[in-house]
Length: 180
Image (cartoon, rainbow, N blue to C red; front, side, top):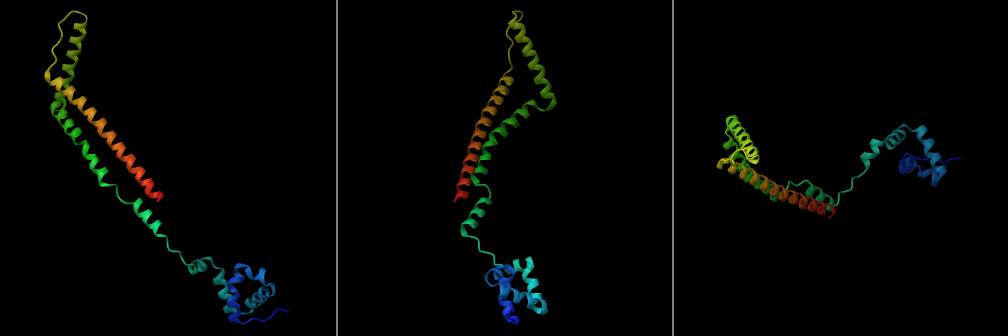
């Protein structure tokens, strides 16, 4: 015969009963809780809430995150360093050279003049190579434009390599912060 339990005693044993620990520890008490739940509506409602996952989840406390986690997350979401942003200022000379070249070409008319001049220079070089004509004179403006293109290419390559190194060092610094 199983003992009769009071509502207060059932509520004390209810968590162990729901978790399945009571059956393992004391099978007769588990049977008594089961019989009491069949006869008592209030305890049955308590049992239904106890087996309800949302109800049990509300009862759990969330552990406080460690300070290192908070610091790590905050460091990983901070904006890019000012050094990296200032490095993009290195591209100012390229912008100036591009503006000069565009001014020199002065739109479609300038581009057409440049193309026809380059074509005539190439023809003059071809005929000079065959010995038919003298060496063509290249306009100073074309030499200036060629120099500007070479300077633009060299500056762009240098500045892009600087930016790539800054990005790499920034990524290494970020990885080190994440490890800490």
